Image 1 (cartoon, rainbow, N blue to C red):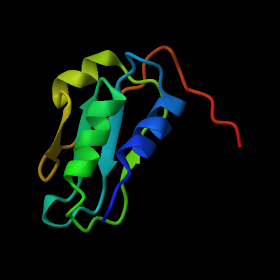
Image 2: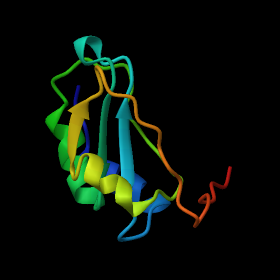
Image 3: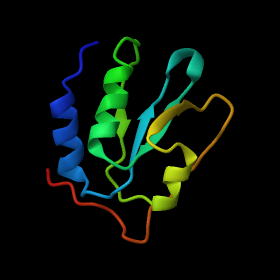
Image 4: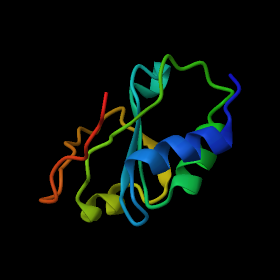
Length: 101
């Protein structure tokens, strides 16, 4: 797969302000089950997605809600496979972002 790093950054920055925590999820990731990561900057998120470009995953998703900054400690600016772990995403008291359709 070929990813456009600037486009990934632009999309993440559309939904997140600087300093927001961004969660990346890749469900149905073959032997990894689900891949997850928490990122403090859109550029680091984009680098991680581009780094996984050789894998044949069905979809890459990021959460548009504002997240609790404590989640960054789970997987700081990196991805991990969730083969045996179960995590729940905690939304911060800041609530939901706004998505205009």
